[in-house]
Length: 160
Image 1 (cartoon, rainbow, N blue to C red):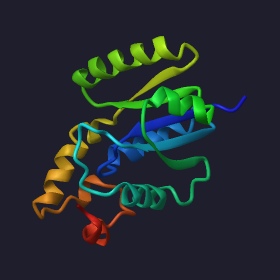
Image 2: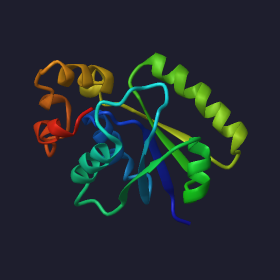
Image 3: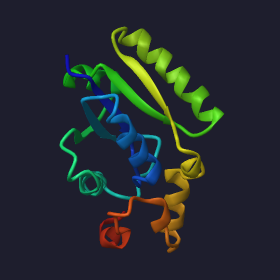
Image 4: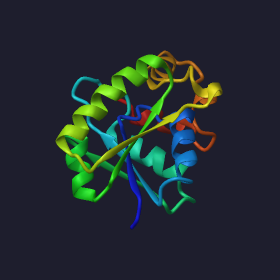
């Protein structure tokens, strides 16, 4: 049976930490779907299509990584795609507490769905999308925090 994991998030922008979680998880899963979601609580900087394009570029040579978009509950998306796992990265103890609560609710709603937590590498633990987005919004150079294949200047005209 194929092990498919969904890695959900807004990925605004996609960071080195995100890339590391996906690449390291390929040793566990047969397929990873990076599911770019619409978060009604967050105002996006990059449009959804731009975020997908950026992620596709990062994994262009990895056929086991798919990129998709979704709205609604992650558990419903997992059911639609046949994924048995939700992949989440953890940077801090606060991340763990937040993700644990979500995982328990997800488990109650979809008992067959497992949440798998991957610890962020120490060198990426300080990187989060909110801080990187703030650097970009204020004209700073965020290149050290995003995958090397991404030149955020290429996407400057597509921001909102």
